[in-house]
Length: 256
Image (cartoon, rainbow, N blue to C red; front, side, top):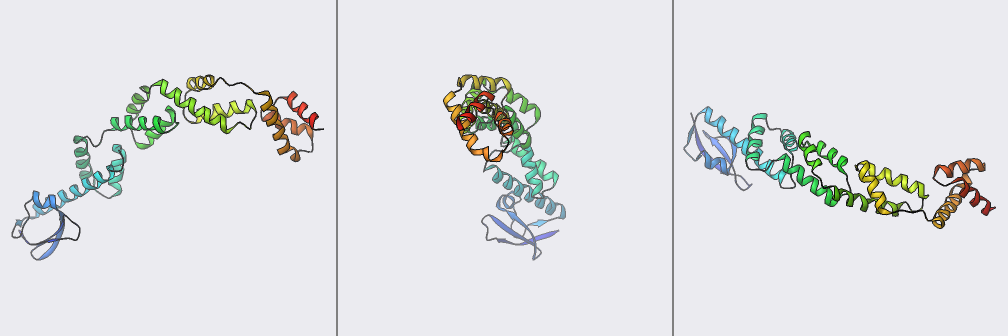
């Protein structure tokens, strides 16, 4: 048996150093101190000392976990990875995870719903992108599929349409054909389905402005014509940018 001969407060509030038989033995937090009723004169056997140390490590791991959660919600995978990174052993991590679940601090289903709501409110991401992000966070596949299937399609269409409007303003210097190609590519890259992409583009009721198209063509010719001594190569380049052959020929004739 060993006897507690001194309990010394650390500079950190709520932390104490425990001395057994006049030698430093281990640190504890206030909760561990109270739980095991540690005080000067308390006698402990080896099994009790081991239990106290394990409980202290568990309490410390729980404190780290709660602090990690204080910044934002976490998935079970994120929490487990975090605690392993802090070098806690598996039994302690499992104890902490169980406690967090019972207190509803960890809930992958609730996490997924909150994550989707935030993505729909603050980003222009579509379902595929949101799904990929949740997968990286460690949300189980069955929960991802369930929550993605529950997304309101009207909200997706509104978000896709708003994003499409912004994209059209960014590409108004390109040919109308090129604008539509880039718009469709951008919507797909954000993770929207083909149906939502088509509906969003249709809702904009886009029409080619011939004057604007001609002006964009002239600007493009002024910008790149010096690269091409051969007119046919210039025409090929401009057609690749979505301008029609007849419009290009007319613009080049007007410049002559």
